Image (cartoon, rainbow, N blue to C red; front, top):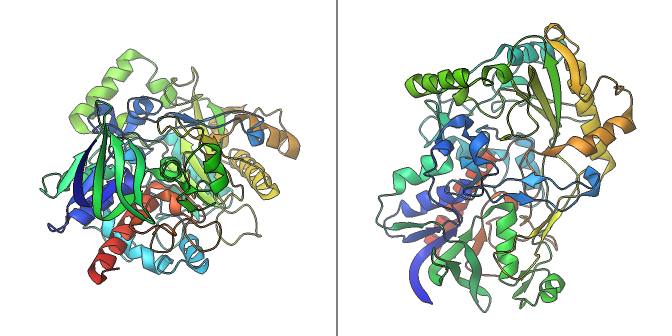
Length: 538
């Protein structure tokens, strides 16, 4: 076993980890090592916006997780793709830049997490951002993360935005601005028609620093603990040899909501009884590790159309060639497309103060990305509940780091979650019955028009049998105090010195929207906390 010594070890080169590697190594006095389980982001499809069709479910860059059979989904197991490559899930995701609501972060602060209110985190969002529209009270224009308007529009999505307004929902030109509510067009993490992942934004400018080392294809196997202090990380190199890197100051785990709790538990940090069942020596009894799992569950409605959609554009080889040439020459056309074009943040009723459902509207339809589009003209209206009450967990299946943990989501396990998703489906169907969509839709395909909009039990059963993850796992290393908390407000693991967690797993409650922008913000916040504590000798 070989060892090396640095100041900081960042475990995980994903959305937050790339930020940490950049910010910590900005001071040449800090020696920083970034460990990433996956390869470099050399796959060319990573950098083409529509490349998620090629990278999701590809084991070369995707962990390809699957959940345990879930009663809330009528016993189905579903895919949970997560990035296993530099940039993490920001190299595979749908490129949608969404921060969530101010109230989300104020709620974190009210739960005892000082420094995490909206006015605390807004400057961090702005610091990262290079907004195409320019700087204002809500946006930055000097950061490394490019945020752009869509380069592609399609009539069916424009019709959806208009129909939503005719159904009584306002248009919102900036859902990341003063208010989230309304129908809108997505903002994207792209630069001139190419993906701007966290690796592109934060790692590429820092690669030449002599005090930053990036090791890929190096999965962490355990944390090295001496007493109640974390002093390093063990990992396997490309040859399978276990190596150890020691951290003179801190280890920051940024593996995401599956890998971070898994690594903590493998290292003896977690619920004592669970660890003992697997023969793992208990170093810190923290029952919250792996608990508090939250995700956004999407019901995907498909409507057949009486006019062409993207399904028709990509069906022939000749059209595919034209699309490729247009992208190669002009960085334009369907290959610049994000996972969705239009969105809506709506309230299901007057009983909620802020939007509790979100729409993702796509000018195509398919059973799943990677399987090809449907052989007919159609578009997709996806709806998800923004703040689910259901809580799942991550549990170890083995003390072997190479064995995937069990993912137990427990979707739709509360009455509120069931009613909110059903009402979201109903709102989607009502919008489809407003002009100008009514002139474009030829058939309600999924669910069928035979399912009455007033049939609550039937709609819920359809949702249980058809809904899938929108890939936003959070909460499994909860920030806060009390028996369920894993890290404090400075992201330090309770009871273990020299160890922090910085990724979406620290969210005490999931944000009201897509999670990549918040993950990058968490990386910014964590870097500030680490550097502040280093200055004061904490």
